[in-house]
Image (cartoon, rainbow, N blue to C red; front, side, top):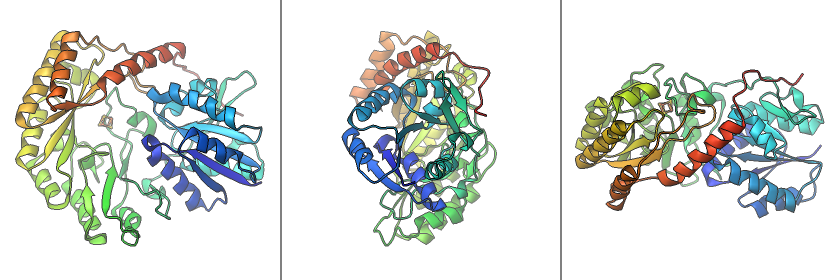
Length: 427
Ligand code: SF4
């Protein structure tokens, strides 16, 4: 059967879509590919004649689930049919497959999507049962999510970050999974509690062809960039230098972005040696440091694995070496009391004095995390005013007010979908 894969292509999730397209390309799966950058374009691609089956890929983060469900309904109203299957993948679908199926998708993709998308496209081509495809949740006759066998977590070198025609080049995924256990974070839940690092050889392989396409900006996705090459909590600068030198050798005129978006640095990894190494290779003038709280009690409760002490040092060292630190803070973490928030504000203001900018977040009880069902702490007006003041002076930025709304909605969804201890398997 002719299969067309249509991705609802949004900037916020483009990296994940690139990885899926790369997996299809690597496997040599003969499918037509279409990218819908708007709901209307997505519907037009679905409606185009010539395909026996159309598989529509959706991916979104938990706070966007509601808006995406409305968009799915709009697309279905424009173009639909028995031959069309809509699948939602990504971290929300993995954590809340029942919510995704109830919201209108035909399938939920559970876990890492590379092997699932290939097996799913093959099953549609062959007309075989989807129950044999790994990493899916399907609806039974009562609408209950039934899971197929889990999708494997592949070595990162087996997964390209983007397809080779390089029309959709993005950051190279350098590390998948995270050995830290921050209770607010979806990364270890989604990708596992160990680092899987991409080899330097695989990074260089991604870069071949950059030159012929006139590309020179090289960015990386990694939860903690100075952990590169290390299995444990300590940074190992040897593999980091091998990586950066390898990029420079492969692409002598590359502008390397490392430690800035979409990667970041843990505060205890910011040492003078590490900053000198970055200065030697990177083009970014800022680095992102995760502080999260100015309260040691809350840092301990959140499982961050560091106290406030290295945060001040990290900011000072980064500034001394010519980087502007952007420091992440989360307000409203569970159990936060007035004195914890006061400590966070004090630390944020001290860091601003040292030359940092504060990236402000509101705690969101994200699906899949240990704090999915935790109550966000109250953020009083006075705290909000002080955050606004920092923002007005250009010393803080971020979507913390919007996240406060998301937080309320996520808590409502969590209550409507109590965590299940038993998962039902498709036979
Ligand atoms: S917040 Fe960062 S360090 Fe903590 S678990 Fe998530 S990715 Fe890892």
